[in-house]
Image (cartoon, rainbow, N blue to C red; front, side, top):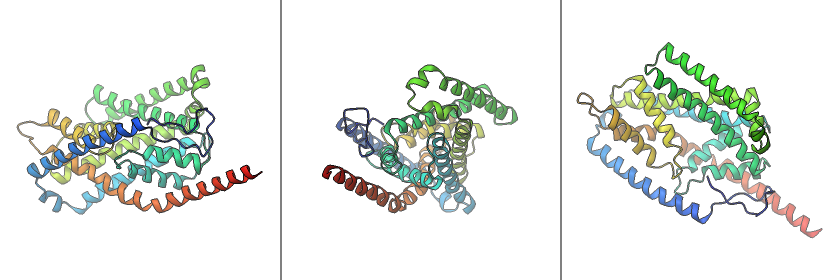
Length: 329
């Protein structure tokens, strides 16, 4: 996310929360419109081709698995933020879980303000510096990259999910994790890393964060598997994992959460998995799997706004009173 600081100097105060530039606002709104058009096309295709009676007749335990995997993903994601930040600042576990749900919900907005809400909260409520937060998020992205690269590498080397594949996954994860930790100790990262180094050199933060990112990816795969089972689509576990990886990568598209992920999953499945014996409405799968996530993030994140907004407002009020007191001296 590109942010514009409220001051020109590099020593931002806690009230100088980053805000969107006009260029970024136009960029996000354009992306949202394109994503909305893609989503409309996905919905239209799913309605035309899909057999929605399968959803209505689905066993309850599969619906529970669809939603439950999203809850596991959310918990793992929030725990990753918590275990990594403890290397530089102790924050409350459940506060970070709540903030994670609020930010995930806000990413569905026309302007993807989920990341901005994290910055604003941590600067105002947790009294963290902007560069400190950026370093923290960069460290988490490094751990995410380790987990994702290990999974993709294991699929390429041995495209069958069995004991050998899991051994390759462990070896790849440990190797890449050690490389990441070694890079964090280099002079350039120590000097210019702005705080990422201490997180990546902390064993608990590094390995805990990597494991939690892998759990998050596994939850994506479980949700995809549940959606496939509900719709009666029979593909291999490796193909299921590939579609989960596509969904995870599509979440990183900076244009917004809506439309792009569903389109990416549908297109990849159509191009690589459709055969004469397996011609299914992949658009319906993409839509249904995504809905399993939205069904958790939107209501829970919306409900937790009653926790988020008062905290932000209270902090703003205290800062205003403090500034007025300083000016009157």
